[in-house]
Every structure is written in C-alpha cells, then in structure tokens.
Amino acid sequence: MGKTHLDIVSPHCMLVVGKRGTGKSYTLGVIAEGFAKLKEEYSNRVSLILVDTMSVFHSLKKRNTNQREIQAMRRFGIEPKSWEDVVRILVPQVAIDEAEKDGKDIHRDEVLKLPLCKVEIHEWLDLFDLEITEPVGTLLSQVIADLKEDANFSFQDVYRKVDETDVEKDRKETLKNLFSMIEDLKLFSKDGMDVKMAEGGRITVLDISYLGRLGKYELRNLIVSIFAREQMAKRTLYTTIEMQSQADLVDSKTAKNITEEYPIIYMLIDEAHLFLPSEGETISSKALIDWIKLGRHPGLSLILATQEPSALHTSAIRQSDLIIAHNLTAKDDLDALKVAKQSYMKKGLDEMVGKMQFKRGLAMILDDKTRKLKMSRVRPRHTLHTGVDASALPDEERY
Image 1: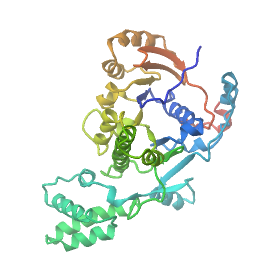
Image 2 (image 1 turned 135 degrees about the vertical axis):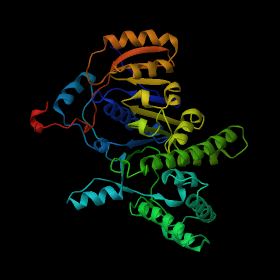
Image 3 (image 1 turned 30 degrees about the vertical axis):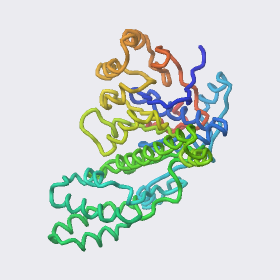
Image 4 (image 1 turned 90 degrees about the horizontal axis):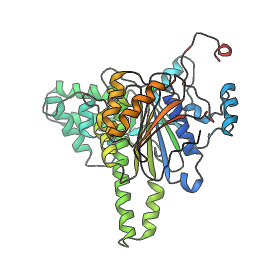
C-alpha cells in the first residue's frame, strides 16, 4: 500500500469523522505531528491551533511509550519523538483553580486569558441570551459601545460605566451581576495574555475542556468566535497587502514583515458539532462559516472532527475538499456525507463502507481534488496518545 500525504500548498476545509473510539482525535494528533515535522522555512509560515475539548492533546509534548505502537512504527520507519519546544498549552485559570482545590496540578505553558475588549456586543448578547431591544440588552449595548471608543477596558470600567447610566437600579444590578459571573472565571482581563495565539512555527493547544457549558453560558464557543473573527480580519489585511506588494503598490519589505506577524493558520477543532451545529446557531457559528466560505483566499484552513456528521452544519460538509472517514454505519451520517460529495463518489462510498473493517485508524479518504476514494491506515503517532477510553483494568492489563 502506498503512502498518503496531506499537502499544505493551498488552504483546506477538512472533515475527520467516525464513531467514538475509531481514531478521530488520534488522526488530529498525526496531522499536528506532520506540521511539527515541517522544515523551518515552511513551518515558520504556518501556525496550528488545536481546539481541545477533551484535554487529550497535551501529550503532543511527550514521546510515545505505547509498546504496541512503538512496534508498529518500525513498519513505517519512524521512532517515538516529542515536540516540547513547538507545542504550547493554554489553559483557563478556572481549570487550574479547580485542580488546586483537589491538591492537583494541570500542566500549562500559559494561562488562557483574552482581552475583554475583544468581545463584540452581539457576542455578549448571545452569551447572556439577551435581545438588543430588551431593557438589559439595550443597556449592555450602550455600555460596551461607549467603552469600545477607547482602548482596552476592564470589568471595573464596565461596572463604572453601568453605574453612570441613567436607568433603573434593577437593570443596572442585573447587568453587573451577569458580568460579575464572567469575571469570576478569570477568562478575560484588560490586556489579556502576553503571547499570541497564532504564531509561525507553533502548535498552540487551547485546552477548553473544563469550561464546557457553564450553565447557559457557551464560553467555549465565545473563545472560538473571538479567535476566528480576529484572525479572519488579520489574514485578510495581510492578503491585501501581499497582493499590493506583488503589483508594486507597496514596499515588498512591508509585506514580508506582515507575513512573519500573521502566518497562514490551520485551526483543528475536536467535537466540531458543538461549535457549528446543523440546527440552530452558536456564538461561533458565523465566524466558522466565514472561515469555510471565505477563508481560502486569506489562507485560513479548518479541520473539523466529529462523531456525528449529520449534526454538523451542511456548509462544513459541502465545502470540505478532503474527508477522512473512520468507521461510520449510521444511515443519517452516511447520508450527510453523500449529500456533500459528487455523484461519482456516492456508489463507491457505499461499497467501501460495506467492506470496511472495524480497526482503529482505518479510514476512507474522500478527495475532491483527485476525485478519488481511497482506503488508508493512519500511521502510529510519534507522540503519546492519551485519548484512550476509560477502563476499569489496571494499566498493565489494557494492551
């Protein structure tokens, strides 16, 4: 069987699908390793962002110690390896605090903290489930609009501005209480982190597994929305300047500096149906659809993994130029893939699913570029995979 590689010559919208335990997260890890192995002249132009909803990608910093996988590596001519200097783990403070209460520690390189000013009015309204026309929603819109006229602002600035408004006390207290709940999570501050999320030659893991859905507050979606929206704006700016440089309208040195500051971005999202569902909208839906439909030109790639393709927004499926499908049998999920692909693939998909064995890592690859279906086996990971199923067996009896 020949080798199968993923190209990075042009941006991609990709899907990794399959039932639980068939290897989706493992495959995302293999893809991340591929970026880490790029030569420096290429890797410095690319930034990889991993949205980790299950806290399974910390181990990209640790070499593989699974003896079965180490034996399998010999067939591929590879060895265990880690990329501790390339991978950066960002964890929210609330997860760190909860672990410390139990006398434990969570590995991280930086605390995930975003500038408060980066949240748009419509995102606050969505987060708090408010309408702009209702009293508290109107007050929120007024306060944030006033604060955004200046530079960065803090929660204390928000409370001060609320108190300065000429509205009923109950409305003020309601809004202040909403912001107070978010402040307690320590996810936002006046200036945010000192490091960039997207940096050339880096794999940045956003471990937002602990955040989950806190009450009705979709903080995971808010984080993804902010990042996706910001990077779309920055990359669009760079692409404009790059084109102007090619036409000798601006200094080529200016374009080169922006290339280093705004690298091409691949964003990998596990459990993607939580962020871009087929029905309804989340805070991150619009920003991710923009990446899918408009991201190719500015150099934004999206790799989405889900165990339920039928629960994922149809735009994500229809616009995918590459699909890696691990074991799928549910009719709704197979039908979702068929809707996305051209007629020449539909018959082959049925035949291949019928012959497919249940083996971890075994996958069908549907490639629009070559208009082919191909059966492949994902190679063993250089790094340790910690996304294994929970088991009552002791570690030494699991393999």
